Image (cartoon, rainbow, N blue to C red; front, side):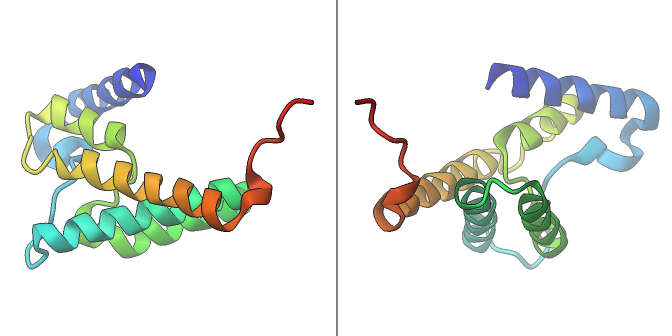
Length: 131
């Protein structure tokens, strides 16, 4: 987790050094017309879809499609974070902390729900117990 946060911060600082503030260096933000409640739901569902694709298929093509669809649909609404580090790095570089809690709480919630669903409804995906 620390490595992701450091990597995201370093990447965002590099973007800022190259492009300045013109691109806002990948900052995720809730766009006009989207309530915080809806943004939380959107981010949670996007993360749920991503984590379910990872846990159930482990197929890079399927996971890539999940990320693409999440970013294509959710990007214009919330920035499509799906990972707290993805939002933390740009927020750190640009000093833009508005609604940062959302980009931590929603992906963690969506990920936990995905893991719970897999444990409840797909017990065959559990790790085999050592015998």
